[in-house]
Amino acid sequence: MQTIDWQSIINKHGPVVWRTAYRLLGNYADSADCFQETFISALEIRRNGHIHNFKALLTHLATVRAIDKLRHRFYRSKNRINMDVADLDDIAGGQPAPEQKLQSQELSEKLRQSLSQLQPQEAEIFCMRYLDNFSYRRIGKQLKINTNTVGVLLHRARVKLKILLEESPPQEKVKEVVL
Image 1 (cartoon, rainbow, N blue to C red):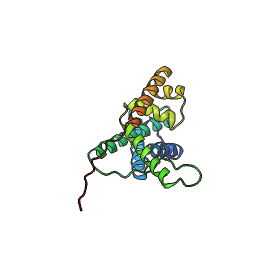
Image 2 (spheres, rainbow, N blue to C red):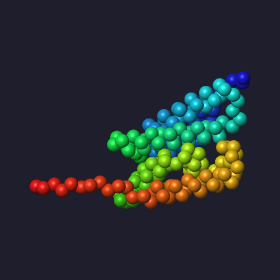
Image 3 (cartoon, rainbow, N blue to C red):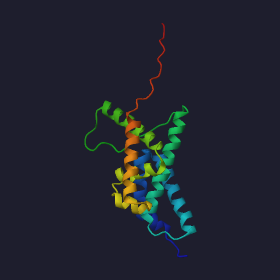
Image 4 (cartoon, helix red, strand yellow):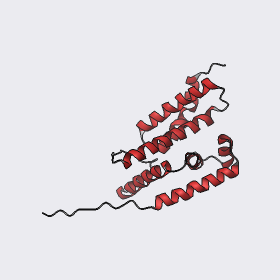
């Protein structure tokens, strides 16, 4: 088996792995964990065989690990653990008004929660298409599935996300306080 210079692999593909993780997770700590887990998984895969396309493998692993973290975050927050969630990428140019920033934060969190509720392959395809701007053909080639299957799974993901994003959160009952 040929020796791999992992430092050069990290230097070359690390920025893509980081962007993939951070776009999905939105905070530094989770993204750093995901980054490490991605390269550890790649090392384990390499021990078991040859890797033909490091960039494709690392992007796939980063997406899967980030979605797993989103699922974990979502289920923890459902169990009443308060989670600190950062924005998705800041809006380009100028500072948004406070109410716009708050709406953006709420939408970002709802999107993360919704992504965590999709089937793993649907979530991965959605992220590859809309966060990484991959073509249907490139997604199909990377995941070793038919381009038509990519379209079907992407359509299912969009429909499910639309439903999940349109659902209004349950209203908490407000108790009147008598003074």
